[in-house]
View 1 (tube, rainbow, N blue to C red):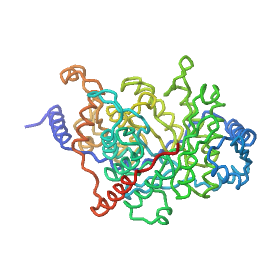
View 2 (view 1 turned 120 degrees about the vertical axis):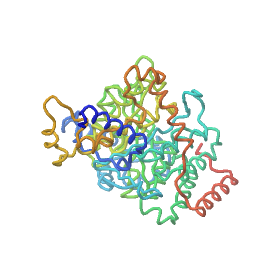
View 3 (view 1 turned 90 degrees about the vertical axis):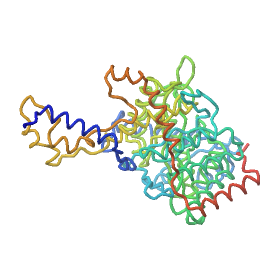
View 4 (view 1 turned 90 degrees about the horizontal axis):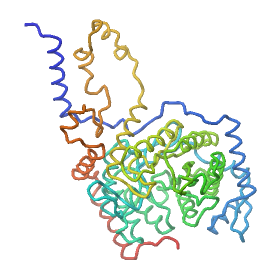
Length: 516
């Protein structure tokens, strides 16, 4: 008996549902993202050069205050003019140019699992989760002071998703004493994850401890550790025009050990930077160049990243504003400035919203679009950031991962093989027909399109029957299930024992306090 095309279609749908229930799609191709698109421009070449030259003039004529005597001494020995009374360092354009020539345009960061190696620079894109919030929040417990449990659960989520490429201090574990916090957070990143760890630049002893812990896990000597990058830090200037002691120490230590410094001014137009976008970009550029120069003075060739975080404030309240049109234009311009000096650069995907709502999604997407279209090599705060960085949200982490995975799919090349162009499949379907039941569709249906992890494609009736849940409500059980089912990556018992012994010894010695 002949089978109707409608019956064939229904059978295909049943087979599709059955396969989809057991299918676990691989996301390994998300581990190394390459942006195929030419970056957008918001400035012409002359405007980019004007900002660059203005930043050089700021450094040469007005200088930057450098609070660490060692840093002033190193810059002075390299040819900068140092005013010790004012702690001011004026850096001439020749020294800046020499430093830019020494800095590598591309480099790798290799964690303990080699397949998690990331490449920074060129068209490579590295997605990092949120970093630095003092509070955690979720739908069950609300906003609260960040804890070690919160920190470790965010590390578990970071490890779970291939599209998030490194660790970051997603929340501050404030139930751990400050002198021991670096030991607890680094232990979590090195044992619950095999991705590259972030290390806070919070003083010489703390950084030394973290470097030693990484060497233990990798089985490296100090000299071997310095042969390639294994970790990274964020160096924030105190805008306007100041480098404090911990940041200077961090730049020096990371450069000496050939580890990565992402040098990022916090230039909010109208507050810590001029209210005009060009003025804020000029200050951002000058401060980044100063940090890059210090790193290269310490060790020519040390891996550095040009950091861009220019946005604006709300002029009614003075509060930071993220996801704004100004932030998008600043990202586009920052990419042009980074390409002018030939260095990899970071941007951000951030939000002002205090909850994981539509505003949070739109603002994060605005920033993400600006960063991606501008050709950013590192996009920080890509998962979990809300409330201008005061909180990290478990639900928003999942929602942001959904968005980041969709960007990862957009980055994939469009296939144009004979089978993909599908002339025969087009000819096999009569005019006015459909492609649901064709061999061409059935051979590809379960891998043809991106499958959401939290977004829904239900109609209103189906959505209502399922509980009328918002996206954040659907994200809640997803993150909890991942945390509950988590299995850490393998770490040799002897290595774990050596790491635990080191942490126990340093704990008994009192740990390390940051510089006062």
